[in-house]
Amino acid sequence: MAVKRTRLIDYKESFDQNTSSIQSKYLVECDRLMDTAAAAAAIAAKPIPPNYWIWNLLSNPRTANPLWIDVDIEYQIPNRPYDEPNPLLRPSVLNSSYDEFTESYFQDTDNQLVTTTAGERFENFPMRRNGNLLLQITKNFPSFPAVAYDNIKYTRNQGSITIRGTTYAAGTLLFLPATVAETTEQVQGIRYNYFATTFRLLADHGTHLHKIDNRGYFEKVSNKLRRIPADDGSILTAPWPLNENGTKKPNYSDAPFIRTFKPYALAAWGIDFS
Image 1 (cartoon, one colour):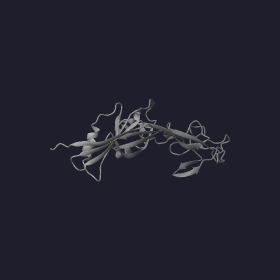
Image 2 (cartoon, helix red, strand yellow):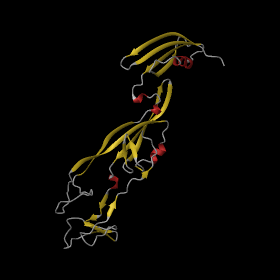
Image 3 (cartoon, one colour):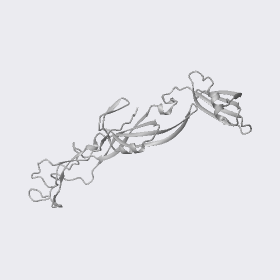
Image 4 (cartoon, helix red, strand yellow):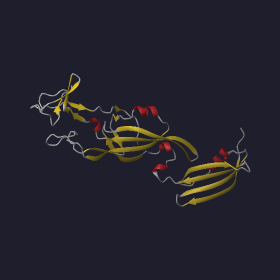
C-alpha cells in the first residue's frame, strides 16, 4: 500500500479572548485528489498547545485545485465540567420544578372533603394551589431503549434512589415518560451520535396512596340505589357510613369501610441518574 504524503503550504493562527480558544488555519497539499482525511490526520498529529484540547477539526478541498486541502482546527481549554470531550462521559444535568395543581380547600386530615358543622355540603368548594416536586435529569446514552422506558412509565421506584446527595425512599418517585433527542456532535475530530435523554421523576408525596371513607346518602340494595333516611325518617344532612358492599352500617357512629385508590406499581428502573 502506497504511503500517503502531505505538504504544508500555508498556516495562520488567531486567538479568541472571549472563549480563550485558538483558531488555526492550514493549507495542505496531498498526493491524492480530495484526500481530506489524510490532510486532517496530518494536522491533528501536530503538537497540541499545553492545557488545550482539539475541539473542532474540519477539512475541505479547494475547487480550483483538489490536491489542496483547507484544514481548520480549533483548540479550547476544558475549564468547565461539561467540556468532557466524549458526550457519553459527561455527567447528568439536574433541573427541578413543580408540577402545580389546585385542590379543594376544605379537607380533613384524611384528605376527605368535609361538610359544614351542620352537615350541609358545600356547593362551591374554594380551591387552593398545591404542587409536587418534579426532577428533570438529562443524560447522554449511546442507545434509546424505547420499549424498556415505556414498560416502566408511571411506576414507582422499587428501591431507594440517591440523586445529587438526596435519597428518595422506595415508592416516593413516579417515573413519567422520558423525552429523547437524538444528537450528532463532532469533538476533537471524532463524530459522536448519542441520545440526550431527559428523565422526569415526580415526587408526589404519596397522593397515589390516598384512602377515602365509604360514606353516602344512598345505599345499594339489589343493585339499585335507595335513599338512606335519618333515624326519624327525615332526609339525611350528612352521609351515612357504608360497608364494602355499599349498604349502610347499623349506626351512624360506626366506622365506614375504607376504600383505597389503586397505587402505581413498583418497578426496578435500572437507570444510572449520575
